[in-house]
Image 1 (cartoon, helix red, strand yellow):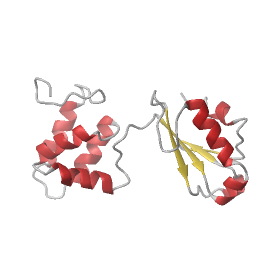
Image 2 (cartoon, helix red, strand yellow; image 1 turned 180 degrees about the vertical axis):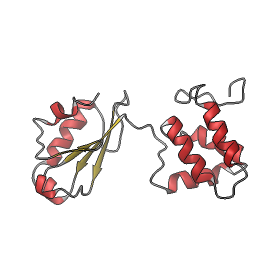
Image 3 (cartoon, helix red, strand yellow; image 1 turned 60 degrees about the vertical axis):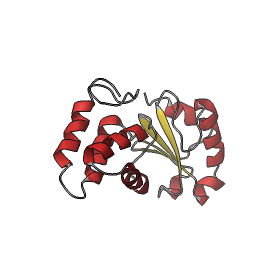
Image 4 (cartoon, one colour; image 1 turned 45 degrees about the horizontal axis):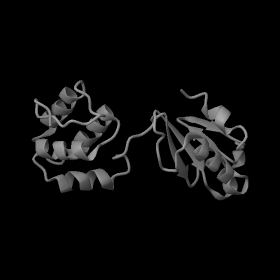
Length: 164
């Protein structure tokens, strides 16, 4: 904790604290508002570090276990840092048959990140998904909101490198 009673965490800056405190203060007395506070705090910080969950629990007068339970139950919350860009690779049958495994391996090796992880510089988060609904374009990758079809391990890095 720092002099103002805020936790010391490398991803939670001094500029973020007034927004976090405002969210907690605004919703503290509203029953069932923990989801709203968690969403607002995740929007501020980018994810929900465990230390922030503890801080929210104190501010909302809720046990840390309850706050953690809500944050870990809902898929919209993340307790790990995310990249500036999200890479989704379809691992469905059509994409798998057409070589998405080689594409995934190339991305993992080039960026030194495993499926489900985030690069050290937080530029990319890598997700394997079951289906992207574009089987006719297999194998398929989505970066942020851009869909790329007929991806090959030879051209995937060139495509990804366009995202700074």
